[in-house]
Length: 365
Ligand SMILES: Nc1ncnc2c1ncn2[C@@H]1O[C@H](COP(=O)(O)OP(=O)(O)O)[C@@H](O)[C@H]1O
Ligand code: SF4
Ligand SMILES: [Mg+2]
Image (tube, rainbow, N blue to C red):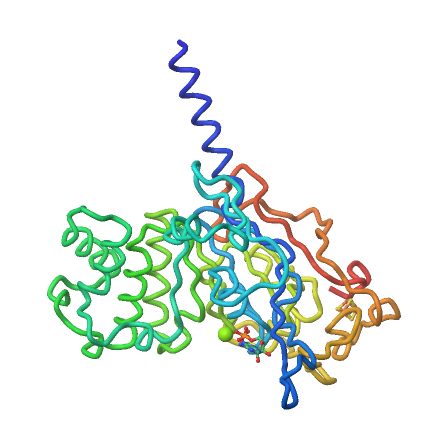
């Protein structure tokens, strides 16, 4: 009886962990100094990421979208410390040994241990693969590092099979493959460390549309099998809806809206999100939509206006927009759905629709 209740409690505890985020990003800022003059003094800063917050959940995908230059890649790099954040927290909650570790401030020894939990997939599969290494060696490097002493060849072949790479490719080199196959090698390499999180920065943007679909399918299948969560970064809204459970929209270093994917069609609230969706006919093929043409200049990330950064292009701006920066706030709507974009109910409130706009509720949508 005692045994049963202990296991019951452990089971409950793990269910609790699975419903909580495995990574929480809070107020993340990356400001690049701009130096001028012969003494290279800091004249200003490019505010590439300017105080963003979001959560990643186990086995789920957060899509991060926005126009080129809005700060998406800098977010990815800051999470794995390829660039230095100047403020904020990246709290790792993903395993029972290292509860609540701030990755930005963790000692390097601890970071090395945690690194296997967060992997990256890059846009250009060719330049991210060592041309002198065979497929077996590329995937094997990750296996060797994170599973020393294991049956390497079997694990490598398993990952090759999962990503649709044939066994006979084991001894071939990256230049012998097409773009789509190279991206599969990149995915196999990233997953070979059995990470909890994969950050994929424009992983299919360099591929033909038909190959994009195949790579997205592989990523989705692997997510179901391995329970990995993705931060899926893209400028392409028509891609992000096929893989994301939740979507965050960035504008000039800020997240202006986060919403469950099923709201993409008609439930978004921020004027910028609306304009972005209307500009991509391929998001919902066959549906007639009027493109929203934004007038006004995009401010420089070095010199964005105080208040709402979108005010120079927003047809709905009012006086407070000029001086008060809008923060993300939950949308108080009744159609909030606790299911993912494939209609599965999690029985827990995972996704909350949030918008950063002073005039929410007064907008015509
Ligand atoms: N190392 C850097 N030094 C200075 N500015 C940078 C650096 N990396 C990126 N930026 C600037 O930061 C902004 C965001 O860039 P990036 O994150 O690459 O955007 P995205 O991936 O959305 O296209 C851009 O204005 C870019 O020019
Ligand atoms: S805060 Fe003001 S300027 Fe910004 S999106 Fe909302 S209405 Fe437009
Ligand atoms: Mg980028």
